[in-house]
Image 1 (cartoon, rainbow, N blue to C red):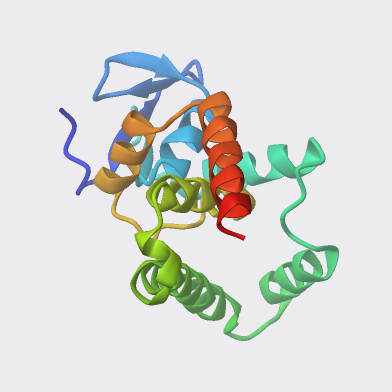
Image 2 (tube, rainbow, N blue to C red):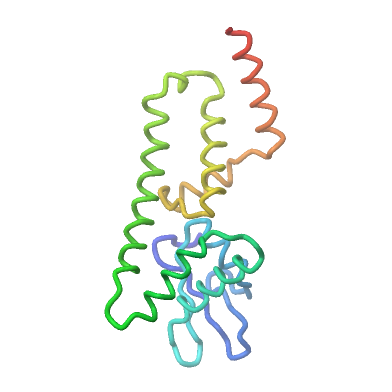
Length: 182
């Protein structure tokens, strides 16, 4: 089993192919994006020179998603990023973005925690399944930026996750039970 505490090492060969050192196979940019969505940190290095290429590849992943119409960043944010790169002095934008994403992850984790502690519906049968569905929805809507859960918890949710039909069935059962309570 891979150690999730340290970054997943990806080596780029001269042929530009990317090699996952944990599984000993070649990976694509989409595979790397999947690792990141699953909560893994990655490090991409050039095999020959040892240069760290992580930033370059992460930007490429974002650019490819944006070009396919999967827009996450509004145009004015992209303009601000370009301005921060083109400005002569030191920019506060990178630090601001880092702090903003940290606050987003913390806020999402606290929201999920508060929902389970303060909600009187938490004792209702099937609430756990509904909460797992809500968390999956939030993760999908934030494009995997959740980061609030530890990677090992994210893996447990994926392993124990239910398919869409089962969730729909449970939701219908909950709606039926709620209508009977009225």
